Image (cartoon, rainbow, N blue to C red):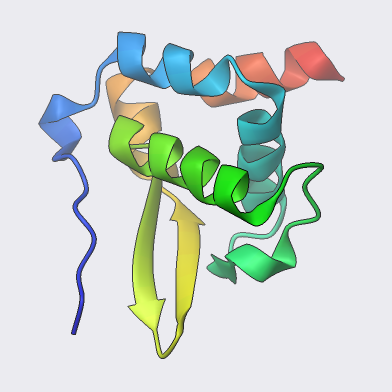
Length: 101
């Protein structure tokens, strides 16, 4: 089975997280994952970009440590690593997403 790389919780940095969340498309992905806490396939997201660009955005979020992804059959399921982000940078996700409201 194919496994995707994720950074360890200790390797998640505020610089990487802020850089990843600087893009509005990635914030939209995170907002949807915060609203629906179940893992979701990439096809569940209505994003204003093409498929290859969507893949890029999910990869940036995964490499920053914000989301985890795993294969389930032919789908890649994404979930928010809320516990990791809240431990490393308390309150950041709520503050950034509240600023958009």
